[in-house]
Image (cartoon, rainbow, N blue to C red; front, side, top):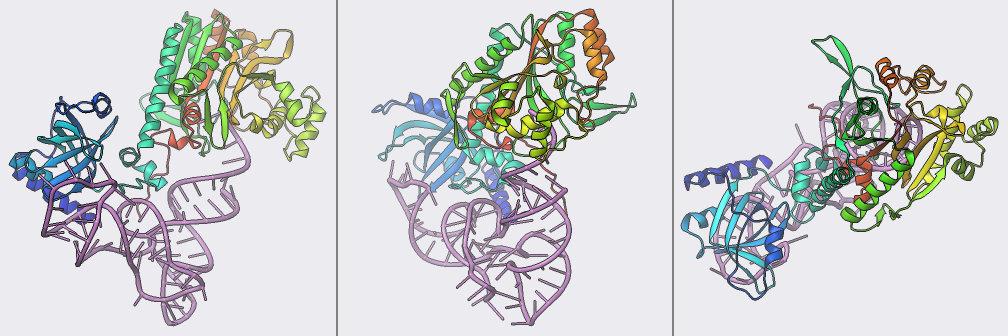
Length: 482
RNA sequence: GGGGGAGUAGCUCAACUGGUAGAGCAACGCCCUUUUAAGGCGUAGGUUGUGGGUUCGAGUCCCACCUCCCUCACCA
């Protein structure tokens, strides 16, 4: 059947060629964005005209008159093709159009008696013949697998998919603009690293043939951005992909987009303010409100957000004092968490993840993590057991992570060497990076650093509860030919 | 990786307790100059994800495999 449609359309393509028309079009400069055409339309003015280009998404042929809807990136509108108004080749072409073809139509623009703004074309230009059928015109494309595997079909037939993609673009642009205003510079650091540092995650491994060395796709840009701080760059950020060789689900994709930023002479409190500003203003601008639905909850992005310490939250939700290891271990056993061969910090964190995170629905900064969990973070002044770190949770998801950066090379070296019992293999943050320690010995200014998961922010601000809806080409298993 | 669910025409979906696989849209032919998912008449379109099995008979029941979704674990 598909083969028959294809053959029919190929036949139409040859008929179009026989009319002397190139079925694959060419440069076309005169089209105006459909949203702009519709916006400038004036009621009761019959002297208007317009020129629009887009994909044919609906067609209603009625003898010597064809109504069609075309859609461009900005919207869709009706065009009308009439035998009387077109030249002979133009009318022949109109008869050979299929759904999915890309055309341009220009001519007078008036409102029909049913109230629809319509271009009554006196010129029809074929810009590209489509040889395969569009998804169903009313229901669009529903099959999730096809939506992900053939995203172009999803984009062309489901306007909300295009809308999410545009909002993602707008959010990232908003972040860049805001940071530019604050005096930050965007930099690029290695995606391929000989040591996978800066985070705790299993890396992807690849091989460089000429050097005959294994390399890791980065799990974090952190240690490179800090080297730039040592070099004298005071406000830097990078928006790029990180790669983590772990499970896939509705909140995790193996490659995901992070922004990391560093500001000299700042601390984690400054990072919290920046985080609030970036996300709350993005909610306003892109989501249209500071209160947005996510699943069945309503998130209020109006700053300032709740700030609570790790210790307070653990007491509130787990009912234990994190400074009392035996109480924490007892709670862990109660929760069914294996604790026997793990260090205290690991057990505390397991209990925290099991009891607290799911309750952090409204934006919440979790402050002051146990220092042992944070090898790259400065200890808190006045309490060496805590680190000046926050994580931001929204809708139970970790959205951001920030430190007052550790710039003491001796402490950094010690932390790199200290492997905590109970950390999963290959998922420690304590990878010895001698060159990084050397850089700290040259002196890194005190600084605040921040990482924000862009995909998850886009999820929140577009109300999408699966990460695959905000990544245009999410990871899927390749189709196996059988 | 564990548990649960799904896969039927190009698309969106039906098919009772195992009994001749259907509809709408799209396609093809004819009619139609103001339609709005246009309408009317007609035509064509299927290895029911793949491979086995049970049965007189399998889309339906059983086994294995593939892919996707949900969920748990890991993780941001």
